[in-house]
Image (cartoon, rainbow over all chains, first blue to last red):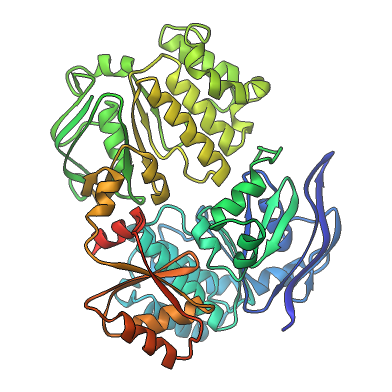
Length: 246
Length: 299
């Protein structure tokens, strides 16, 4: 299958400081790609370049076939983004949030209506269309936020620590949604601090001090580092990190 | 050292119940964990115990002092690290620490021994403003500020949330050392794996305590036999196991599924999976973890 994300020595400098150094990797269509790293390793900088929000200093990258230097608007239309910090508007209803995001991405009213019904049904939120998002429990908000982030049918969705703070059952229901989206061909690029979630990914990269220190399937990484789980792999790679800045 | 009796707290004129009828106690020198997701009521309990919030009903005693009548004495004797970073962003590391020492009528030098291990890790950056620090460094500074007046009880509200695995490990090693010096610690966390590092824990959800015990005690009271099942395609495995009739519960845990049965149907499940095309399934009996217990108690 063709890669949907390709980077070649992608680098970002801020003055003398190299936040992300020569990142080279590919993400295949329909893959769940875990993007891990210590605080301050450069994950956020890398993500912002991939989303077309930050111009790289050097290197190449193509996202859904579009260039990160010259086609950032096309990139933004082809991707979805969700983070725990910013997601939905609390003072809009569930249906209004969906209409708002659909509208931003230029979807027709008819299509938005159709997608709204579909989405509410998948989340079993049919009774909550007119509920203010503020009144939803955190777990529902996160699930809704994920579904809204892919309402325009993007090729890739970027999830930035999507599951913080929710109970263990809700966290797993969230991953059921991710797997469902992958079944429909969406590619998932996800960061997390829960190391058990790293095991749900097809492949995982671990950034340390601005470089990709390891990249492989969880099973192969565990074998390579003689570790029982991904937490031990991460600890082995990141414990000698020099950078502690965010 | 800490005692809560039938504590209840509501917000929005009673419309939202944060905690209902919570009672437990923490012994002198104990490291006690409140384990639960956002919205469980953990921060509300911290605010009540640190005298920043009045309960609707019930009593609470910290260090022998009542949280309502004797709030001034409590404030002198406890250290509190709130969930949200609450130091002065435009003061440097050293200025923040000095400020908190002065407020409590002490100096950095006087209690340096207590914070030394932690402070030395951030001391090279002591002229940097708190707002410019990384998550791990903010966390260490906040802990130093909570300790600078040598409290007898330490309240730590989600100190490790959003911090990477390496910093989390270091932080728990620091807590262990503080406990060894006789400080009583009440700490909350949404990470179930950190529960094992506490002497005792309360699992809490939606304002109610699901269980209180030592981590080993909670694990021992897990009622079912639990199995870990592996196969190369975990997502398909999950769907196929869930479609089998004799399953009590089935959840993904890392690269395995944790499964319990309603009866003795282990062999039947294996042949069911074989029929579904899984030819590399392995199943083994395992000891549950705290997260398994939490999921079980949620039902």
